[in-house]
Amino acid sequence: MAEVAEREEQRKRVHRGRIDKRKAILDAAFAVFARKGYAQACVNEIAVEAGVAKPTVYNHLTDKVNLFRHAVEAASDALISQNLATIGRLADPGDDIRGTLLAVGSELARLACNEQAQALRRLLYAEAARFPELLDAVPGYGPDRLTEALADRFARLALAGRLRISDPALAAEQFLALITGPLETRSHYGNRSATVQEQQAVTAAAVDTFLLAFG
Image (cartoon, rainbow, N blue to C red; front, side, top):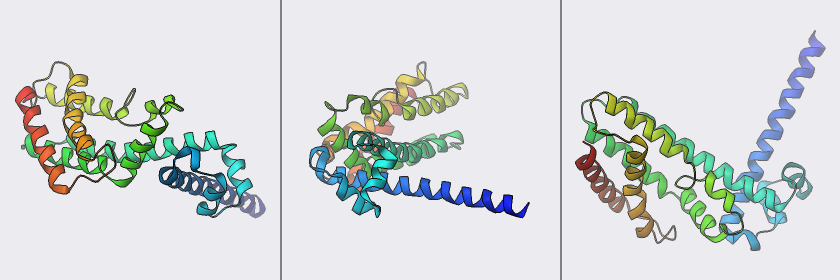
C-alpha cells in the first residue's frame, strides 16, 4: 500500500510539474510576442525567458504557430476570468444600483487598460489577418463570454424590477461599448495607458448614459 501511495504521489508531482512548466512557457511566449511581435519573436528567446530548454517548448507546444495561439488564448482566459469575477458583483447590487454599476464599470475599465490587456489588443491588431480565429478568444470579439455573463446579470436585474431592459444581450453589449470604446481611442488603441482620471470619467459617463436608457 505504501509503495502504491508513493507512486501515486510521484505521478501527481510529475503532472503538477508539467502543468507549471507549460504555464511558464505560455507566460514567457506571450511576453516575448507582445514585445517583439509574431514575426520577430523566436522560440529560443521564449525558452530562455521561461527557464526551460528549447526542446521542452516544442515538446509542449509543437511549433511557433501553436505556441502563439495558445499563448494568446491563455492570456485572454486570464483576463476574462478577472472580468467575470467583476461582473459577479452584480449578483447582489444592494440599494444603490448606480453605485454598483460604477464600481463594476470602474473595475472593467481598469482591467481594459492594464498592461496585459493592452498588449493583447496590440497583438490582435497586428496579427488578426494571420490568425483571424483568435478574435473569437478575446473579450470584445466574436462570441464573448463576458457579454453573455453581463447579459445574464442584467436579465436578473430586469426581472427584479431594478432595470428596464427588453433585450439583455443588447444592453450588455452597449454597456461594455460605452466603457471600452472611449478607452480604446484614449489609449491610442493600446499604445498608451489611459489615466485613472480618464477611466473614472469614461465610466461615470457610461453608467449615466446606460441608466438614462435602461434605468
